[in-house]
Length: 418
Image (cartoon, rainbow, N blue to C red; front, top):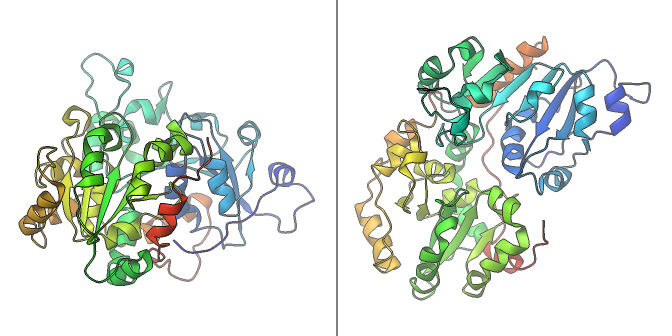
């Protein structure tokens, strides 16, 4: 993403819309941020509005179990938040949210945005299901879209046409407000692929070295949840200086356990030269630069199919994954890592097995309209705001060059407790 700084907000002036403001009579858009992950996806959306003098953005952090670090992440972007309780009392012309918790209380039309690759994880709170009701991913479920029988979002954003097919079965009331707009991460990764060598140089990958990206979602069935079996291979299974390793962990891992604790558990990685990418970092350039991706059923592994890297999967929870999701398709196509064989041997086998285009069917399942998210998303936002769109295109910017892996390696032991 770019280096643009978001519109700054102050509590009293923006909530009261009083005489303190210099630019007045703006449409007011509330950006509801629950977690760092949600913030990163919402950034793709609110950046489409923030340069328009007719629009004032207001940010709030909603309560969430994995909300640790969210305010700090927003502050790093130049964003000041208003308290959640005050945001609930105020009226807005539109609200943007990537989560469902509490949004039914907002006094604004809500645009609900997906925050991952496709609809992968099935609803976990099965106690809320009616007898005979199927488990579906949260963004397709009545539990996440309705409140006391009322449809909450004014617009729901999906990446693929199959999502509407599923929605017609799980929550048909939501179909009139559902839109297939694509996936911003798909578009940015594709835009960044020509800069792969630039990313590798920025990371410090030298000639003859190869990069292994280890990706993990959160939860006990994730790569990180089973790290005790993978860690010995990472620490002792890659001989010499020919391999560099970067770990990309879901921000919920850091928010749930605390930054210092996660880095403590991974202290041996730092000693062996393994970089731990911080949760606020732009991860897309690391995926593009990788020669191999070792991952689980999470979004980053699925996005890795866009890059040309060979993919190896860790053992995953089949019962928790939608059988129509990109993760399910990938699990039927990619080799699975074994703890009983040397890691370097398995990497070389996966490289020999991998063929260009071998994951094209998985990549195609990530978006029905590749390259079009920002254009389509902006059109929906401006229609809901009752404004004409700006007279210029909304280009897709490639990911920026990343810091050197050595920087993330040194910082791994310095995180503060959250």
